[in-house]
Length: 238
Ligand SMILES: [Zn+2]
Image (cartoon, rainbow, N blue to C red):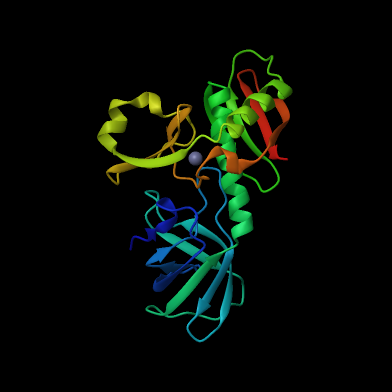
């Protein structure tokens, strides 16, 4: 059954009440709704804790999608956790500090893609460092120049907003898709667009901060050559 993914409308939600909707053969817990971001688009699933109505606390090590259309999320508990039953009332809370750092990092990657207007072929959000891979025919990228441009956008405190469009609207505007390796999920009838005012507009299911100022200063730490047409740019929060 589809999970109501509350983080898609409000990435600042830290916890929610929910009911156990199903249990997977692998021990995953499917809830009717959740604040847990599930691993996708290069961003790891959230960690946190599930509390039962009897006061048990079950550590959750990550969350994953069970289907290609990304409609159902399974929360994976630590080994040896007590079993739950379908229908149980629970509360889930994410490790907010970790998630917020990922939101800052993830939003910074959007800025990086605005500063380097080339096709993106891959990327990942890490806890200490994140990266994007670009399809760039020539080298000559300078770490300090890119760092300065990204930090300039951060300082401008541009608004970051989401909106939904239909699959048909996205099909009519293929130029919106910057990331060649991570196609936005299609088939559910609608696609989530993330806009950084005046700078960047692309389909993205990730979690973002509300304004670029929240990212704080960042630094491009490394630019690697990964093949003839590929440059990997790494950045970190300062
Ligand atoms: Zn994003």
